[in-house]
Image (cartoon, rainbow, N blue to C red; front, side, top):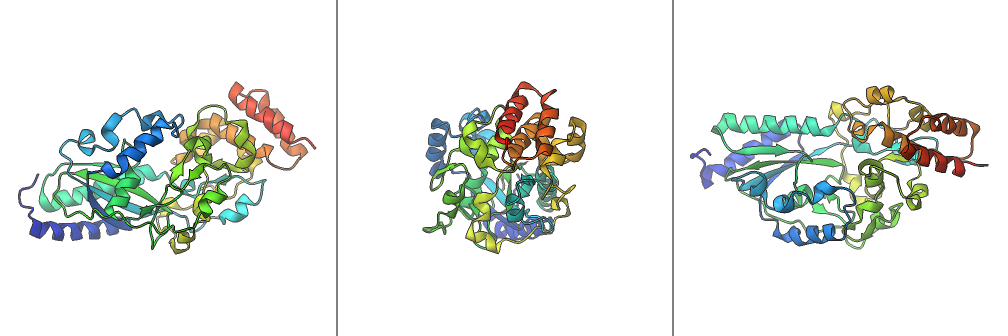
Length: 356
């Protein structure tokens, strides 16, 4: 670690880092220490309740999620950043959700996959710091390691964790991504857990289609449509299928109803602009893609990670929630002949729902 950083010039360095971060497209940067004891017990309790479902990666790293120096040795501080992502050019979410013939895709996935973009920007930021002060210890993360990113961001002062368990910023809402740089730089830290400004509002709890927000600040991921459509590998429980409506990749309902998102600013990142377009696609068109078309049309997108079979599974459920039509029945029956057992189960369910 550079020896020329003192309390006097550390603050000056941090101000430079904040300027560089904005030049790289981040809307905010703050710093916290590594003490996550305030969040540790609630995370452990969440795991004990099995609210993480099949997301085994949430517990397999042991204490590494809240012991930063176990993940990256010598870490003393964590730089936390946020980047707005809501695409300015997309069809309104309400209009897409209201039309059962269209598929709804979470707004974060309409553009290019954010993981690579943000990692590259964080790496550029680290390189800029290195050019200024010399070699230092660091590692960048964007939803790619056992990191409690929302608690870190809250403690750093980027916002507060709302009742829906997403981070909310008083001036920017919640439509943003988070990223971190674990470092040994002795930067001044914020260490401020912002006061919650959710108040008595529980719009997110009331609107959740599958009642996944079981209490304020408590999410049962096993009921969450984002988990069901993205993380769950097998059959989606029948009890949730009708409530999923036309949501085929993720769900934004808890953010769409949040009053703080009236302050959200659409992203100016070209890579987050809507692709193909996927903001209001016809379900039958998506369902008729073969596997190569799925791969071609989701290249560079976060959607690709769910794979073709989950894609068909999700759309089959959405088609089961549409009004009866011979075109829909024909499409379902055509796919059924060559479907895997998992997809076939959902197609058969959809056919039963689509009877006149």
